[in-house]
Image (cartoon, rainbow, N blue to C red):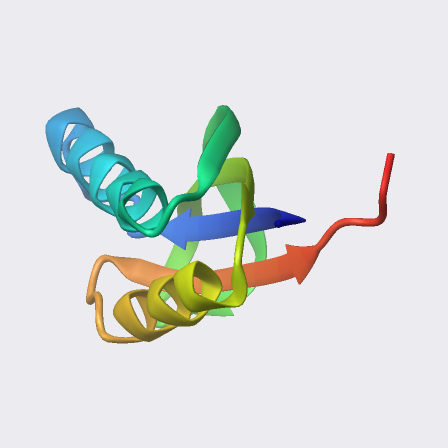
Amino acid sequence: MRAYELMLLLNPELEEEAVEALIEKTTEIIKVRNGEIENIDQWGKRKLAYEVQDHTEGFYVVIRFKADNEATTEVDRVLKITEEVLRFLLVRREKE
C-alpha cells in the first residue's frame, strides 16, 4: 500500500451533517477496498484566493490514508461526480 493525501474543497453552504456524510462516504470507499485511514483534518471554512464555481469561500478537509491503486481510482471517480465537491486534490505522499 502507498500513502496518499486527499484535500477536499467542499461547498461552503453545506450543513455540518452533510459535510460529515460526505467525509464518511469518502472514507468508506477507501476502507471497503482495504485502505487505512490515518487522519482526517477538518480545516473549516476558508476564504478562497479566487472564485470557484461562483463561491468565494470553501470548506476544507484533508484525509491522509494508505491504500492501493484500486481505492484511489474509485475515490477519484466518485469525487468527480459529487456535486458538493468544488475541487479535490489526491497526491501520493513521500515515504516518511
